Image (cartoon, rainbow, N blue to C red; front, side):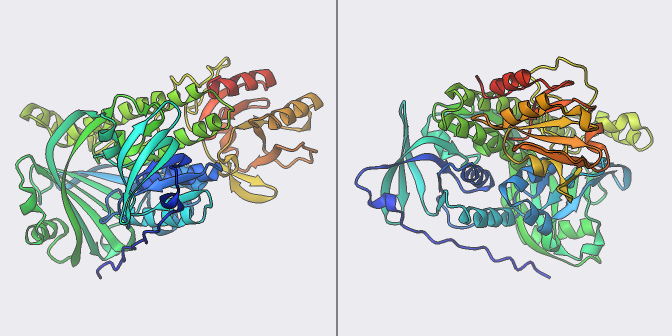
Length: 558
């Protein structure tokens, strides 16, 4: 029954930089080959930016660690070229259930809408994610992943960053135009820069127990118990991962001894009391943890950027760690590309910190509220919480007050300086600053999805109903947008196939079920502009080339 995953070991390889007479300069150096660092490297390489990744280890993360990946994470992973592997291996789930004591009080669906390519969530052990990302990096000529290369010193100048790297064969020095620090919660890069994260420290201790058992015992759903009969006064979370591994989280309170709690002889009776005496299981991995909710003041320090846990931390309730981390790199890489190519001002890079600190604050707020609800800090708070749980079984108004971990959704960057404010009235959730919606389309007679078509560039989406909606002037304007130094390619969204002679950079997509039109509150002439990270940055009821150019320039910080 025991999971037989073999942790790969990657070879240290001497690089040519170590034999160079003078330090070699690279466009971008990424510190840390965890999921966030590798996501940054893959994205940069796809954008044709050479990147070096330094990691002081030579394997993937031991233990399942991050396991819950949201739809937005999967949408981004599709553009990185690893999304399908994650979905194929992971456990798909949309439904969560909440219990109070021995009784289910309600359930929820993380993806109530139909017709999306990706589910609300998948569960997958972090080591699989990292392995797939390593494979992807090895496919890319522009990415150089260096194992057993430990950053030991960093110095920032006006025009470059100098890094000293320790290896099994001794130290060497390289330089970089930009550095992205993705080296985790205890970031040495942050420490070397004399910077810190600030926030709230939680003293509650939690036990993670990964166990292997028969998958038929429980469905692939997220089940959360408040005050269960087998764990009085505390909480427990259960959900399934790949290879019939189940993650169980036990709230242990403040006073638990972590060394005692993670001994198998203490874990196994606790798990058996939870699962039932007749359920066979094997303990695969365990850890006791505490956590903080904190962030750096700014995620940009000159030519050094911080992403993922190096920039911000949250509690594990809500799966906001890896999910928000990949949103960081998705936000940063296209901006770096434009600035490095001289197509956007360097000030555009300030918007990375502005947008992602806003997102971090939203995640920290939700994470802190979840923790306070799950682990009440006084008797009055516990009385209120239990009253809410009892009401939630029969009264829907109480259910939004139940907080078993507000699960990760992408923040809406509605206050971003890169957005163009609406001039027209719309009635939908996809506003400027929100990720674009998805939906099934026909592309060249084949099934596809809108987000797959959009890719990682600036795009326009123009809704048409018939051929008369496209006069010569409109087609000429769309063609000119596609021929700019930073192109805006446009997808025409129609309800049916049309025989059209379209210029290069303009394609027709058929909205198979009309869901894209509905979700974007569109009608003939409605135009949406999306950024390379697939965030909506402007929209208008009537296509206007000058307005589109103005909105794109604003999105590029001009």
